[in-house]
Image (cartoon, rainbow, N blue to C red; front, side, top):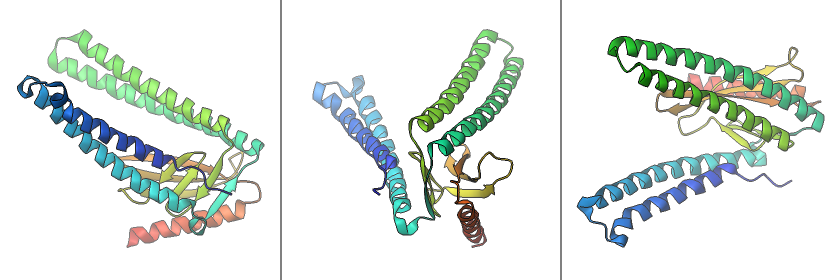
Length: 249
């Protein structure tokens, strides 16, 4: 069976395209005869910034794409699972319900914190109530829409395609989405095999990646096909053991 297309390579190509756009912006003033002191230098400087961001993004995603290619190689796979339509539907509905509850809780927390910051800011400033109130509402609206559309996007993807999973020590590829916790500052935080309370067994992976404000945490839950429960327990123990070894080293 052929390996699926590497989505991270496509993302790397998009970032490479951003570099090209930045280079064009740099030379636009000269091409159209714009005076440097009349906005030309500023436009070229903006183009340089775009090129720098593009280079950084390209390098990051080229490395991540290489990691995903490694996951696709049979010798690096701990498992390659496919699912029956019934198994995948059960997973999709359960995942959507859990993600909706999680995003809803996060939305309320962020909304309350934003409201508190707005109240404190007004108490300090003492004026511009409508400006502060409007800003708070816009932030809450953006957070709410982001949570809604991200949840719907995952659900639509799961309903559109019959998923498959690739699992390795470096990460997981589940239904056209890559989750990589090795390299670029990423780190596996926890791995747990879950059964009993769930409608179907699954392996839950939690990992983190560096961001502007510290580290962002992510969770991916991989459903276990019927008959693969023993293999799934072994995989979870193996990855957890490697994770603990890396921490001790």
